[in-house]
Image (cartoon, rainbow, N blue to C red):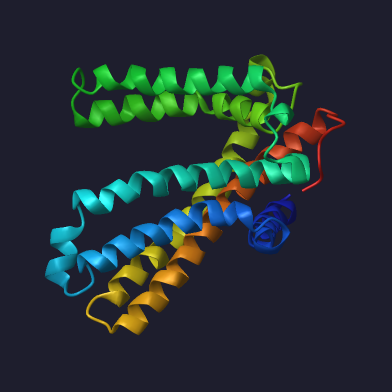
Amino acid sequence: MIGAFFRRIWETLRDGVRLWWLAPLIPLISAVPEFAQHVAEVNLGMFASKEAFRELANDPARWSYGYFKIAGLVLAMFAAARFWAVGKRWWDPRTIAWRPFLIGLALNVLVTVALLPLEGTFDGVAFQIVTVVLTVATLPLFVLMFGGLFGDREATLARAYRSGWSRAIMIGILFFGVMLGLQPLHQFNHTLAIGESAVIVWGLMIWDSILVGTMAALAGTAFHHGYEPLRRDAGDPASAAA
């Protein structure tokens, strides 16, 4: 069992990187808007000094690119996950099982919205406890949503709660393992660029954009590889081996 767990981690890392040559458009969905924001940061003079970096971090011009960057990151993660589920037709909306996807998405949004008024009702610690309890209790909703995203037409709310707990945990472990492992490097790239020459700054910004595209590809691969055993165990004939 331990061997299978570490094999899943290795497969996630291997396959996420492989997307750069199997389907390069997918990591580029995230890398291109990331680089566009870096262009804006350099033009603003953000890397001239530590003071400039702090002052310009929340500049409206920078954040106008930030929204596109976040959108690109999310789209690239979903595209990467779908590539492993349906192959070269990852872009085709007809391969999505819309009913479980929309039900899972709507229920996740409702849980998030339900937490908003509770923040003012409970104190800090109590609110954190309520948040953790609700998050754990609704983990199968993510499994349901991903099932629909992957075109798993056998995905239901009942099956998600009956058999999806271990998959939800695996998805979380793989996803946060990737993001928490590479996020410090992403931040460090910015720190290294402060006060450096234009050649070094642009080199770091190109490298950082590639890194972010890779993170999106790895995260999406983690979504699929964490979910796939549930789909395979259910005997879904459309399931693609990870």
